[in-house]
Amino acid sequence: MRGRTLSVVLLVACLLVPFASAADPGVNTEVDTSGTPIASITTPQVSSDGVNFTIEVVLTEEAAGNGTIVFWEVQQCINTGVCYPPEMLEMTEDHGVWSYTLVPVPTHTYINYEIDLNYSDNTSEVFPEGGFIVGGKVWSDCWVSGTESGGDCGRVAVVEGGIPGPGLLIVAGGLALAAVIARRD
Image (cartoon, rainbow, N blue to C red; front, side):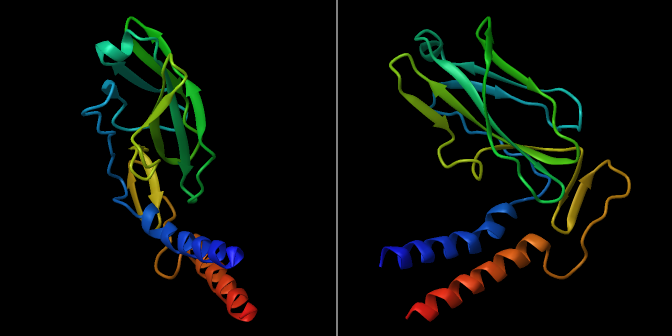
């Protein structure tokens, strides 16, 4: 019974991935900091391959005064539809401004991010709750997302029509999983 439940959950998760990744291509999203220990988050409006990308975080007075340490969890996704594993990066503090600079990977589409606060009492919080799907996102100056592209990147190959590769794999995997589940019954 446990295996069947796990299989159904995995099937549903696989089928929802295309919908989660299809949210507003080319539109940056910001982390809502209202009511949090974060006073502000500043990022560039666009990211560029090989060019420094700096994020800055300012904490509220209370959070800044109690020994809070700030981490930037970042995930870079590239134009082929692949996202690299998230990285947890410890930010450095200078006069109340926490910052970190990275160099985006070649052919990146966007940078996903969230902010992790580690408090002096050994507890932590992630902003926003809900992961990268609701987190901050900064799009590249040359991006491809499914059949759409944007920015200033000259000629970029965009798939026209048909089922995109990742979608086809998800559908095939879902059907195979459904066949295995049906066969067990």
